[in-house]
Amino acid sequence: MAKPDENWQIFVHVYGKIVPVQCGEASQRVKWLGHVGIAQWDEDSSQGWKRLGIPLEMKNESGMVLDMGAAIRDVLQNGDHVNVTTSLDPAETG
Image (spheres, rainbow, N blue to C red):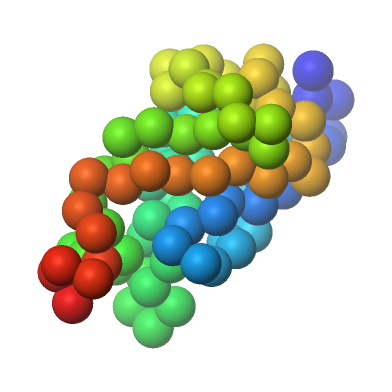
């Protein structure tokens, strides 16, 4: 569990990019982490959802599917890496 003053960072893998996401105390939902990773995938305008859509599934480093409604701090550790499956493929929306 996060300490009250701890600043978490999770690394979100989205279509070949690793996006570091600052999560504060990590009280946000896993789904939020996916949305932020998708947005930041677009390094120029932070509008990655235009090409990637929404997060459909997220997995931890060992491949376990994460509960999208769970708090980040309840299912991950500070510094973890996660993979996002999106509703759109950038090769098809490019």
